[in-house]
Length: 483
Ligand SMILES: [Zn+2]
Image (tube, rainbow, N blue to C red; front, side):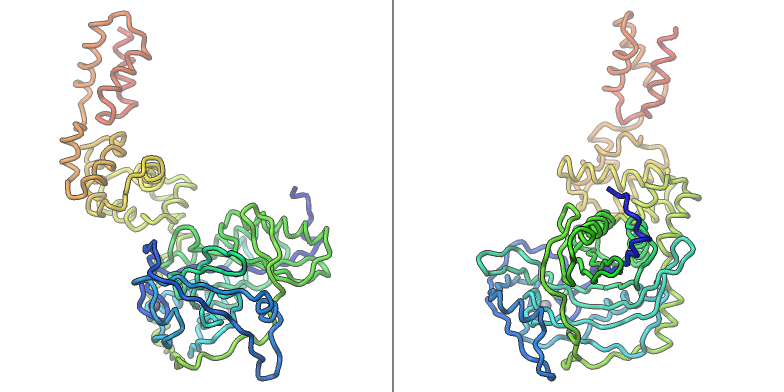
């Protein structure tokens, strides 16, 4: 479908990336793990638009009001409190979230304002109990380099995430309050011109991976969300909200450009569908949607503090990926995978402290772990870091074979208190020497002198799997067959 010449269409796009931070909520102490499954009660509210000081009512707010919807908020035992219900003023901004946000802003080459002001931004879909979202600009005029050009990062904000929608039934919208208030960093690019949809997706990836280099952003579904605006020559600006997956971004742009070429587009806000197409949501919001948060004082950011943060910025993931490829000989995809996995820091520790082969370690912490979790429902989370280190230490000392890793992980997840040695003993997975395997094969061969190679190899492997390298076993069986 991609025969479109985006350059001659003068396609322009802007990105807004949202990333949740891995710390407690922004304006209260509630945790952000979102582990509570069942709400303890729910509260019903309605929103009413009020004219501004200039006597105007926001068009988007009026549109929403006319839909006359009721909002039901699910309350949680420890993951929401009176702040989320808008029955208590916000607490002071979470200093850790602010620090992570500032690090991200610095890694994206932003200027840091010396005073940070929390503002209220009108939100009219009910996803905030108060009718506004608290947001603060923490970085300005940044950039990131992409294939030799500088991509402008116009603004970075620290804000509170909205409630997650659970469902809607005949004018009653249900929201969960546990996501409301989760610290979110919003990164806005300037206008991107002369790029293809695929390149814009790459730029989004680059920005995302740079922000994630802090190691303090959340991972998993819904932890990164992208909004964008797209326009073509002489056309209006269309906002598209809620692209949940980075891999979908180029497709959304392609579909949206096609739609704008076919229909006569109107200025509006649209929502991204899972297949990359978009649907109408509401008119674009009016201007002047921000006003100061009167419950909070401005926050001073000293030059000294910014300098100290600058000195201690983490290595960017982009250079980590390069290092893993050159020094540790990881293939490109595996290097990218381990860098963005939740096991990155464990991986680095293992590589530093053990002699285990880095490719095997990376592969274990990505594919094998994922496979065990998905296919066999093994709770890998139950295995402590020290057990992983023990496992890879054994691997480095050739006390276990890489083939035995899945079985050992399963055992360790089932018996988190037990050691790797316990696993080896109970699973009977102590490595066998070449001589021992040769002896096993010879015994079978003595009993069945006319056996085919494949059959013999199969029987041998069923007895020695996980106790010797599969290639090594193959060599032994081959050498015996030649005689
Ligand atoms: Zn709270």
